[in-house]
Image (cartoon, rainbow, N blue to C red; front, side, top):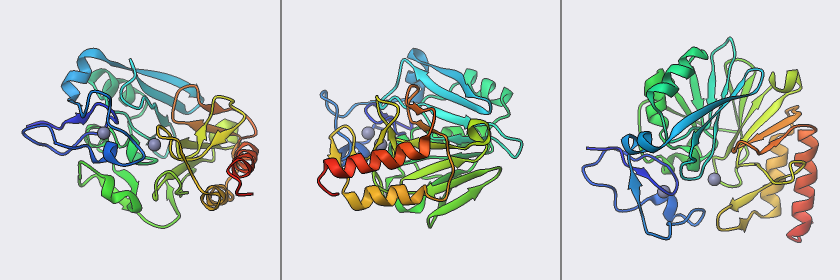
Length: 269
Ligand SMILES: [Zn+2]
Ligand SMILES: [Zn+2]
């Protein structure tokens, strides 16, 4: 028996004798099947050819990403705080070296994930650190490895320990979630956004899509809703889902001006 991991999206499935026939996440119109067809791997295989890089991003924030990159290639973020560390988003590879290093950084008290593309090996991480996983209930259908560690939260916001708040903004996925870290950027606040709000190559801007690989935009109303969902929060920085995708200053204004530009471009203004 094995918990197979989809090579294209990096999501780990419930235990099975044979690899699953389908990856429901990749068959969804927001993802894709790789050119060689549906391929599967395992954690044991990934451990042979990859390792995790653990790199400080700013005081109290550590990036964790695999090298070479796996599947979608996101990096997770560990928010370090006295009230208990929170792992924001997740990655497919977990190995002994990572467990040791993260324990030295204070471990993980809770895991929260922006959307199903980053569910990855979340259950492995939850078990290694004895942490619950907070997922928005509106994305429940996309959980491919159900587990008692998963806490489905509902509604628009959920407060976590410390100065952390989960905010559902929808868009890319119905349960698409952001994490606001009030203590980030030296107390000016940081928004951890995965690709629900995507920091783009010009890091003064962000973007919003229904599908990134298949380039399906969002309608104006959904983009406006995303901006409204961050209205209550102050933030200077926006940490996207990849190492180099960070808006370092004026983050809240960057989200607002990016939404305006986007809505104009799709003729929805
Ligand atoms: Zn997949
Ligand atoms: Zn995604």
